Length: 501
Image (cartoon, rainbow, N blue to C red; front, side, top):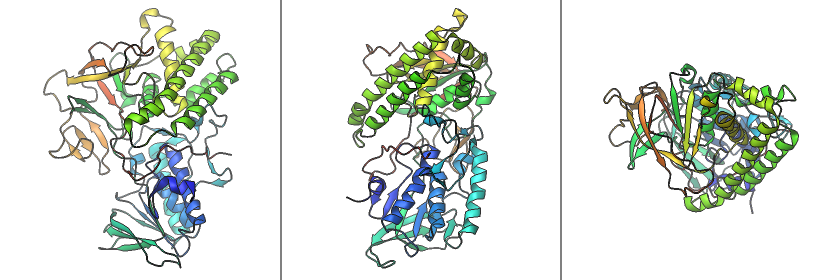
């Protein structure tokens, strides 16, 4: 058997994909990019006379290219956009933190990363706003181009036209990869690259932000990485509905209900006092549960959605049980936590979260814990009983959605022949050159939202009745990724190291 990491990422001989597997956080993509270079070197697929071609100049692809060039491998980084890191450059309201989602592991507050516990990662990654970090990454990439010249070449506005593995001697070894490029900045018409390996790091696919009614698109919301106006939400004026329970949906819930607090800031506020800190035995219980679930779900079926659900759902259900139990005990034994939460969500915007499953499906335990903690507090412990509210609605879905004033704006109008989420110009909003929705006519406009039960056994103890039909002026849709971009991958669920000593 060959190298297990290379086997897990291989699309074809000498051809790898690093941005499709889970987990897909920025931290994990950077770490994956650094690790695969060292494994390719060990396998002698790349070297000083066997170049590397990397497709996609996001955080993962740029990390791969920088690490490769640093180790003396001639490396070409190919990017279709005019500049690298454009996805993060557009996210002016997203904060990134490399270690907060490792909670309840003890190093969650560190905020720095190393490779194998010793070496720095190719891109410096400290806590900060996504667009500011992207600007810093651009400077680091430009510095690497000068420092490791001529081993690092960046071709912008360039795409791959074709790639093939041939039995051509390259560096005394065969076969090799021949990559044909479409011309762009720095690329020549019909340019051909000969390489020892090809790494695709061009993203995870388009995000599904669409509500469908009778299998037809009815509404499209803003994607996670697009700029948003959540900071403009006003309690008593705006009412928000979020569809989905993955990490993107739960992160948005936490941001909105706390007025923009980062998850790690909530934890640090609770840890300021012994009266509000989460006891060590409870953290250990959660850490053990999350570790067990990650290990079990990593072996779920990749190709069959029905089997995938069957393999994953028992772990999600057990996680829900344990997190709910810990939250209930925490609030029952530490009344100061209730007072702290009352302050944290004192100026909250009203939110409802609906999701089809009977449990939260977030990958990261911190999102799951804070969502359940805030939800139970708002439902059972707010000092004014009339202000108590259920915000999590498992086993529910949006059945229909319409603007309250017909014809006032377009919720969805795709270009004929194009699938929603794939065009760069639509009547539903304005998109930038990278395909991200940067403004949306629907934000702040009232919509009548109709809810219904999902097709689940309604006897499940966590399934609740759908919210009543109501008016919402912000609708957020987080339904995961549309399509799998790398169908040849044998396995997409990975257990990566923390990247921390």
